[in-house]
Image 1: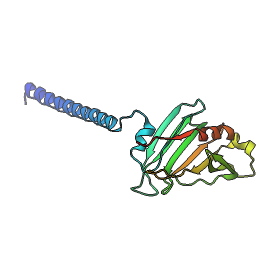
Image 2: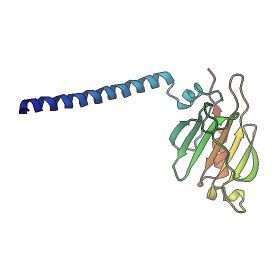
Image 3: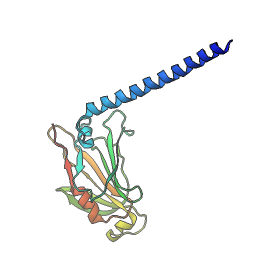
Length: 189
């Protein structure tokens, strides 16, 4: 085989690789454009609302914490049911997690924190729990962390929502309550 033939074969391989890469890049770009325009609102909470049968809630007061993630997860506990939301604010070590799921099929599962009683969140009875294994009191909340859980009533067209607002520590019960009380329903369209 001559040097010329070898050079032609190499050029063909390089061109084939380049073409495959270019087509893959174009496909990913078009897929991103399709996804963005299918969702369209620019608000992740609003976009989630268009795809689930339960009412989605968005915090209006994040205590100045930046959103660090927004994950829509498949329901592993109840396959083929609504996805659920996991959103994080603040940091990985000390932050606030917001979980929303259909109350009918709670895909988020249930934690078992030590009970600290109940409170009202926007007129709804909510349970308070602290993440510790021994005797704890409400004043230990910022040390150990904990959660507030409640189920919102359904609307005319959307099902009820199970909500968990939790922290691994660093935030007081009062701060977590403020975050939970700031949750507002996405307007139905």
